[in-house]
Image (tube, rainbow, N blue to C red; front, top):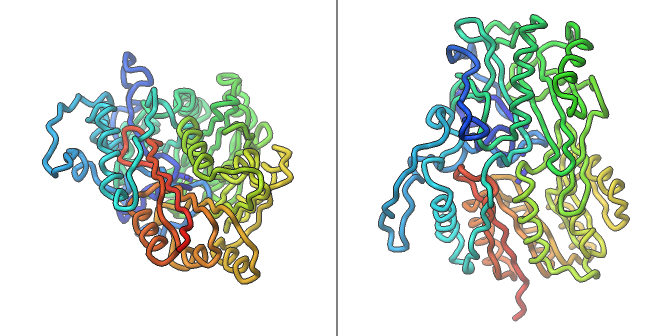
Length: 473
């Protein structure tokens, strides 16, 4: 369930999951407001050469709505008997619904979306156990706390900002999106106007000239802290002090501003180097009673309300009593592990390959004054195998793998460790089905509960948490 947003590669491959601009439905942030195009024309960029292979980044997760099933495959729900369910399709509220491609299910009302996702999960996972009713959102709009926009020149030489049309380099101009944080959209529009005032040009990937490539905005919904990341093609930022002051004058609510240098020919949004232009360089948010420090590259769930529902369900499944040793595999910045440490685990050990994420997790443990949580950089499968060889017990393992699921090496290590409970959080029920089949056929486990959660309304993605319990014969 891990989310840095990428630009689509010129090969037309879909952008990678998490993210960062997945699940997009573009329109006014209030349906009564007009949708505004920020340029007279769309623009496209024919690629000069194939984009390099995409690589994982810590802040990218299963958020890309353009992976998985196509809307054509999923638009018509099926009844239990397999026949199509008649439905009235509402007119999509977003005028760029068919161009953007981010919100595949926007042509269904929300109740129908939930019904569709429930049936999808049941079709994949009910072979293991009955599936509990999906947890939906009360207000399924403006839930994204992370927003990314690409910038370009339109044919009329006006600066536009928006998202890439599915599998293309064509930017769909967008000022307001129904699933994004309205404040983030507002800041992006302000930056676009300031670029004209400061004579800053957007980057052109064909000529490899220009200054601004992307803008990434993160907001802590509980703290209202806002991070703005300006992704540039060059370290030379003309009048950066005056530009920063002008942006802060328009938006004094901004907590920190960073400049991220990405001078490579790549499909990744963020580069390796960054410089703080204003503020602490990080923001904080609160989730399940824990504080979390969020950097530009760190992964943090994009829908806080539904993340709380998901994590609280995971804690319920774990049934922590105060005596358990817990392993948080694929721990990221420590969100699940720290919630478990705060809610009754005796000891929590988080394991994560990405060293920057581990540093964030350690800082987050200090921030929450939790002395029963430890984090280390390494492969979680190898870590669990070492524990089993040294006969170190674990009572509960939380696993939250990326969209591709776990591999057999990890799953066999989990079976060797043999914890009493496994709480498996997944952003892809297809790969979760595969992994559950392996754990129940090769190991001493039985699935005893399954809960779907609608983390990404209006997209075809669904999150699920499953409880596996050790069986004795």
